Picture: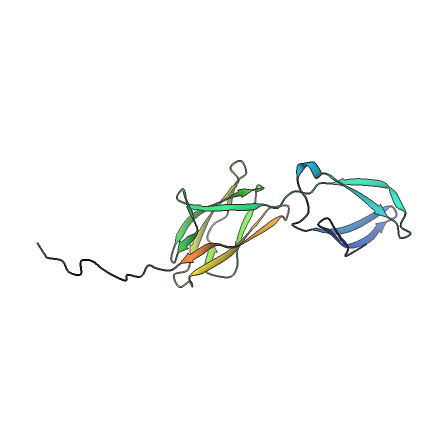
Length: 175
């Protein structure tokens, strides 16, 4: 039945393509269990009179990617300074070949094509931070080629410039 969620799955629509064939659009919520012990899922089709079709098929759910941390120059970072231009490496799990990073409209822009290393579970990308960016958190998305997406809100900040509040000594002798 369209719109009825069950175990993290929601059937968006069902249409009869031809005799003996139907098309179902199903969304998979982040709550769907994608662990190896629960895959593949058995899918049964019920007729309008609620009798089950004798045919059934299996559906495997792959987990969405996750992001663990971001590195710059081999060190974990939680922010990038205004005016930064260079490479960052995003580490995670479930990253597939061809994965992409997307920064929302804002202070950080992609300046190159992301490069994925599935074995290392990383995505390396060149970015630039606007020199006039407002300091604060920046959200970004990691999207696999199968459509699995993770939004990372607030795990990377635009850093403000340091402010000098005191200088000691306050004078120097020449010589």
